[in-house]
Length: 296
Image (cartoon, rainbow, N blue to C red; front, side):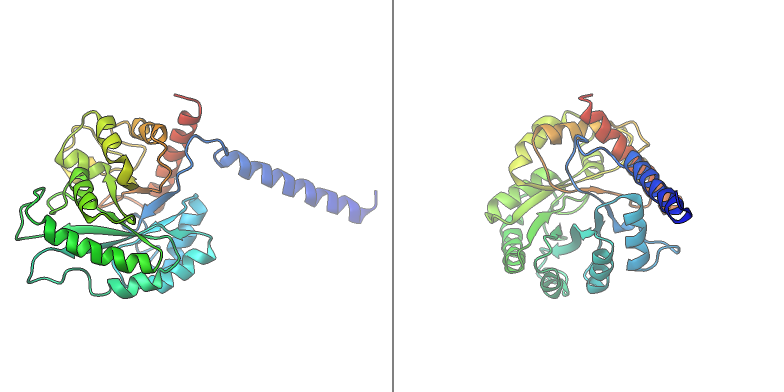
């Protein structure tokens, strides 16, 4: 064999070996879950990753499908970085307020929705009120009015609205979100299930009846490592490989219910290096995917 051919053969063998190594590290195609897995921005931005470019590069390297940022500023720059790395903005976390003396939603929301046209990004809408009691129905009429207005704007851009239950807010539980979504009666309005807020407000229990009841409205789910008996956020929000709550059991329910929407990794106030936390959580996600693929 001529020297040139010997070198070429060696290069080809090296490429084949590298390709095989990458396939070995990646989860198998039939991994048991088809859901996109993205990270909330509270687990991505730090002094080492201050820009959309650095954040998108890190997420792509670790195997995440995208990000869920908060607020309406800087969307074009984030979209450009995500596009460069083949990622997606799965949800945009923004607020609404039912009180008459407060803006009904973030002032930048109409423009943000226009910027996201055709992106299939969820408008992740949390609902506040100082006037109406949390987890009540007292402010439902006002909530429906605002949600319908946001839904109309979202529909014009081909987007959907996912109500975000949050501890201490007017829409506090996924059942509250489903109630408001049902009253809003818009095809592009649904709900979010947040594991940490469910544990905080309602505590551990049988999730199957709840997930079955909200399944018609379920657009997105957030997960994280958590202790089943946790009361404070440091125990309710941990990297995915920590905590006593069986997240895989929750994902098994979602799989049985044929939920194919995105799953977000909640990272609020998780201490430690963000790259390492995201790396560990991705390893735990892939291990759970393998477990479900094996029928365990």
